[in-house]
Image (cartoon, rainbow, N blue to C red; front, side, top):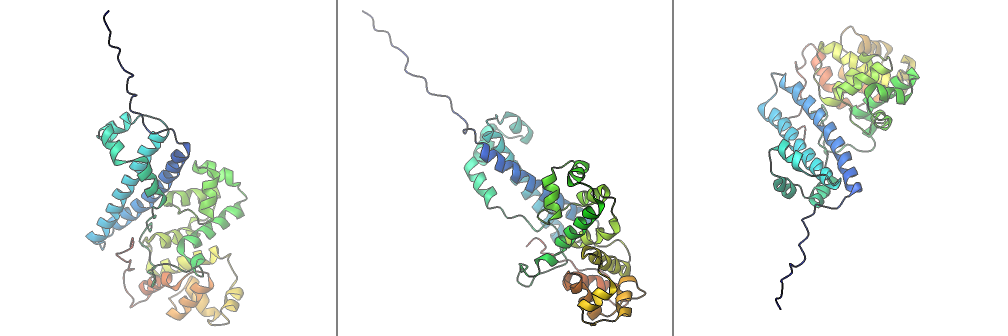
Length: 310
């Protein structure tokens, strides 16, 4: 009696990672953060690349940051695809890499851990260079991006436009608008303009604050740039009256000096600008370069630290 050999059980086909909705959601949120960082850093690169005084090191730093962010986004998207149970074939074609290469390079667990501990870069060269490298909680509300958020929040509240309507105008989720207005999200130039447009606001009272938050050099004359910045700070602070400002400074400056600082003609001495900046809830480190440029014998350019992303 012949004995037939029976094939043993077939080995199961290699499986991809199990569906992981939580991991996919984390990757989605990470991609949003990275995309926001990319836009802001790219904006900084454009602004600096059009400035003849920008050094190669500064531009290279910005370009390298863009490349690093693109790699982070790629990893998050590969893992998102796998966590949703989708094949990597199309991604491999787009990336001009093999499926195995993508699978090995972007392991779900490793990528997940890297995304969890990633540190978002300083989004643009800033006029502030902290002595300790980190702002304190006491002055955090005086930071440029917070003053911008305050100005935009005031613009929105005074418009009586529902936040959902603003979000629809921007084609984003209402929660995203809320986080921008609260200062929890950095604001791109495009989004800033869309918010102002949706609320029928005054861009001239907001744009100087965005410039300060993103290290953008003013395109107007130095004296005009200083006054525009101070007027924007006043707007963000709720437009206190001259009497209120002078009272908060305990008569440290005169009404004539206050009017000169805000409207000209000429530019007052630094102590006047310094006190006014503090009274309007900002930092002297921001207004000092603007004041220096506006002085007849001041510097002709605003110094922006080369190690802006350090």
